[in-house]
Image 1 (cartoon, helix red, strand yellow):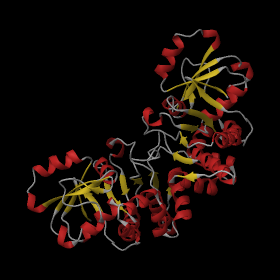
Image 2 (cartoon, helix red, strand yellow):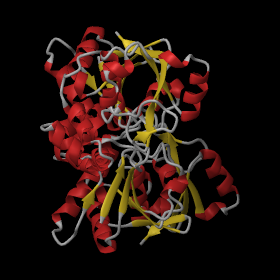
Image 3 (cartoon, one colour):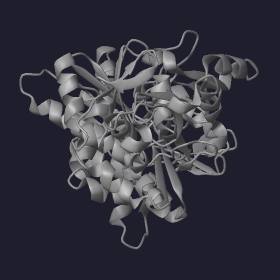
Image 4 (tube, chains in turn orange, red):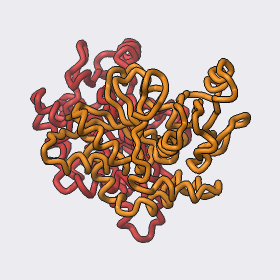
Length: 243
Length: 243
């Protein structure tokens, strides 16, 4: 199994990801929120790349069973039903609903991955589930960190650490032959330095600090809980569902 | 001093780099080759983003004092005078010459940085010189790793390690107040894992292995020699010269 990794999804064209096996990682908060929403009974998540797409698509769907969720600059989008906090995606709020989902980085990376052979959504809350899936598939994989389009580096420390910990889990399995790209080796090194305390790392990360400023400190606690939401969100057609 | 870092230059628009202080790092081989060429008396390096630009620009210059240098897939470009091996840029070959320079990643990153406030070229061969320059300037800097456009991660381990070692040098200076972005912290962690033997790291890196296959193993030895070419190539107008 070859593991390739990208620290950012900003530079991709969607055709580059065609026919590849992809894990999209956006720890704060898209990947975590999607896992929580689906665990809480949401019917499906429809990731879109822009607010305009979200509005266009939801216009043709029936209001009662369809919600719009997501963020711009971390905050709920005007006219949307839900923001991007996993705490909003309770069973009461989302059970049986289709959620058209638009975020700055995560949903863009997912929308770009629509021609992938397989796409699963990874975060700390389902880290072992994602690793098990990769081990069972035993194919080449691309770990795509959503990154942070608002920074010049397009880099998210938390996504890199999460990817590095997935790699660490794969390497532990001695029956698996794992070949790492340079970027995958680098993420592994990053996770060894910053992965000891996930919550502390999130709190000191650029995006984590921004979310705390916005009043979302509790979200960081949810996002840091390793294997607390052991589900596997995967792309099925154009929507994300539980495998 | 705030230090921000990008592991790739693929996603930039040139206007994003406007008025910033930039170090472009392309260890294998553009940054190293430029340092060697200027040390050996080249008058100036004119970085361009495409072979078409190189041909267009050189058409209007006089042949005797102007050379074309660079690579595609590591090899010399048809009709060019020089490839991209630092060994080709000897005093005999380059003294007094203007060199129109076109490579896959490095010269593109440099051409994109043309609206920067300051742009210097960094590599292992001039690492301490670059660090001293940053310390003297004592302004915010962006370390731009050229990366590798041919890989899905757009990542070069050797550029990340070099950037991380520059950061390590800055942190050693206790009189300097250095604030690192998440990506800069990550590069620092990567350099601690992979920076112990530069030559070994280059030999096992994706791009290093490719260059060895092409017959450029000796280039890696040149590129690995820390502080062996203590010069500072900087952008002056639209050309790169020694400071």
